[in-house]
Image (cartoon, rainbow, N blue to C red; front, side):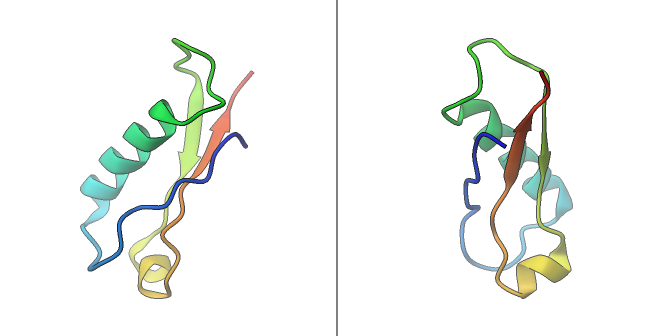
Length: 62
């Protein structure tokens, strides 16, 4: 895991928006080698969001 950025607070924005934001945050996060495209992330579901979990877990696949 190279980063754990948080998504914005507020109402759940929907799965598509969470996916878009998560991908953007992980791609721009420190720790990902420049130009790397082989990363994955775990984003919160709507249930997790409603429980206050807004972090994205970014993982680099070496």
